[in-house]
Image (cartoon, rainbow, N blue to C red):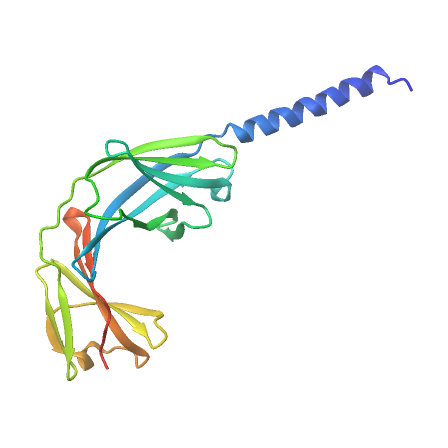
Length: 218
């Protein structure tokens, strides 16, 4: 069967168009527009343990659904953390979408300070990189919270202190910023569904926070 010249040219045009489209999508490099690293101390059995919260604002021509992997490296210490798109946390703030994790940690000791390198990878295999530096230090002792006979007492030198409240099933309810380090639980006007609360203490100037175990407040 013979093809006329116009049919052959049209076929080549479509093939070329498909190749250009695929090449364009696969070569669209993602970018890390902004990000932060925050140190969080969690209450452990033998003392506070360190974890980083690491979040970025990603940009990709094909949308956030085209992003596949996020890596965080500390090259000097030869450390690497790998966060897949079905594992990272996504939230929106001020019309910007953030992705990341609250689970950057090491098995023993404290997390290294200094320069970290973030690498964002999309489904086409293209990569975008950006460096972040964390040099913050913990300036205050780990805080404590106790509740006895309806009276809460907080031992904290941290600049900002909040109660993170949970219901009977352990689901998050709300957060209450505290104006006093002691007082009656009833004066906090908590929902009747709130059964336990943890203390979230924060030093925003050093991107550092501390989070205690939850205690019963009823």
